[in-house]
Image 1 (cartoon, rainbow, N blue to C red):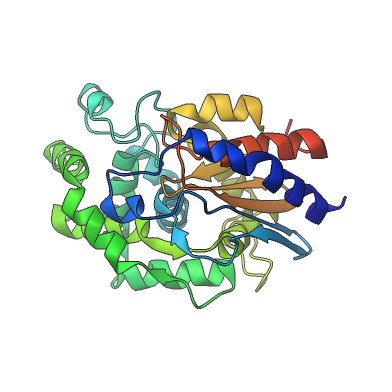
Image 2 (tube, rainbow, N blue to C red):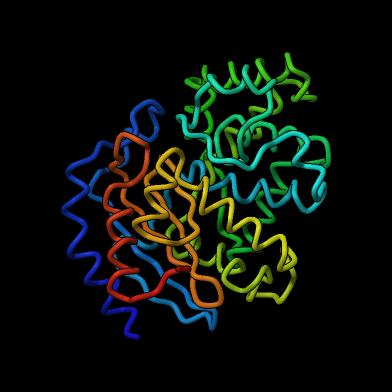
Length: 304
């Protein structure tokens, strides 16, 4: 398949759709990102690379980072992690407080904000230098040592993160946050402020297309069974409360972020990252979702 021709077609067809959305504004640093940015990057299991658009421009990956932190916690705790986090789709907004009280402070899944905050708490308990551990881990997955935190975004997150503070304190009241809330949220805000470009992002998820093994260094990130479970979580919960519609339309395990990025994988084949900042009402990239739907339609490739 001519992937370069395909992604250039997707770029031309779907970039205009971004005009229908709005760049995230509740985090001031994200509101400054030009809405016209658009990138597609694809990497195959054989490490063949195909890119178009602003694929070398870093952006804030936001909730996509929740996959990385979950892996660090999952590798350490194993099945015990499910004592503190569920694995069901939430059906509510990513920063909702509604379900937490009904479910005794146990977040529905690791990809809503409450779940990722619990994961950050776990990492604080198991790592001496959690931010550096996370950064080193992501750099290794992507095969690129240039990845870093955007300190301006992290500060902007902290300044406006009132709902996240509410979520953390609420869960601490139920005994599901162990470390000091300020320290937990400092890690959480920094993970959301990871700055990566589309090439790096696609590369960092390639291990999931390779049954859990990082193809750049041949080290096992997750065993095949756990990698399968992570992809299942991405399929059912990776796009907030639009995950079901995304699975219906696209049919790939994926994770999105309010920075406008979406990364998806086809097991045993490839990883693809798309960045277009304007979002729909659910907080997902309008052009990104449409590009991925057309990708699976034109290529005939999905997990179904």
